[in-house]
Length: 404
Ligand code: HEC
Ligand SMILES: [Cu+2]
Image (cartoon, rainbow, N blue to C red):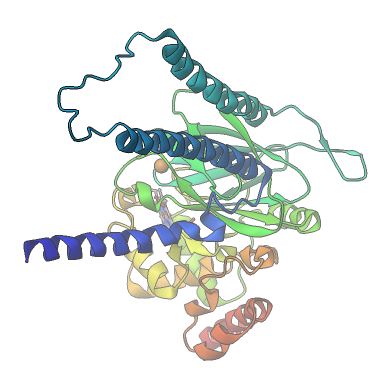
């Protein structure tokens, strides 16, 4: 009876583990399905080390089983002492040299790739052979979100970085508080960000357009596991368009509807001290220039009206425990929060959004959730492109309704 229970528990544990691990197979979040040069190199190393380990395992097991069978004590041999081989020079040399050779096979590409990952000085050349500008992004890790500034481009954003697919993009990385680690499994390995003033540098390169999920890979506080971000790889043309759209935002734009205008005033009074719109230096809270173009709230929650309301109402206290917005002194009523939401939803400077990059691998939340009076079925069933259009229409319709 007891044995049966133990076995049952073991099977259950394995099932649960398989379910959890199957989450790691998401193509936009998997080291095993690389979508960039860096991740492809890492996968080579993973395969190489796994093959070497399997080889050692198989050889050792084969010898072991052979020896157990061959040299078993046979009947009538109870007093027989086999030939003693300790101190055999031949054997000692053999099992010292073989591991050294295996480690060398592993070490050569590992060291080579380590240098390749650290190389941030190779000029970027287009397919036609002309030299491309190096794009550098200043990355700052913060509890529990990421701040991004495009050097020389006058573009600031947070939670999501856009990169073009035609070149490597270089990151200069630091932390404002504790050590975090920047990890986009499907396109590159991890890099720690340190608070001590030394910047770590790395590059990102994506083979194809797509939304690639990033994780903080260093335990950094109670909401560490919620410190998600996205790398959005778009075509070079779309990237340029995005940069121009972002550069066009000053933060002083007046929204069209009265509700959103009221929301903007509330925002300027209560939120601007921590959140910027338009290019800005690093602030306490995320830059919101293209907030409404984002696919996730605070990097990780679905962009739904309920989530956004709860976030502003509770300052994210339960959603992201330990987050620094809880220090905000404001006290808004329901109407004011809705006005702010309406304003935040106008922060949509670009047609280049996660949807534009979606290659069918990563399709997730849907901004039209924010406006539930529209039939949801139609939205959910339709294609990605349609969804974007519908969101815009819904946006306008809601604005009109509010004005009446
Ligand atoms: C004390 C500074 C502070 C104030 C004031 C503040 N926030 Fe925040 N806010 C933060 C921080 C810090 C975060 C990031 C939390 C996290 O993800 O860990 C944040 C996150 C957010 C997010 C999610 C952003 C994203 O990138 O998805 C929204 C939306 C937001 N705040 C709205 C507001 C609004 C609206 C107000 C004013 C009513 C406001 N905040 C006032 C600090 C502040
Ligand atoms: Cu972190």
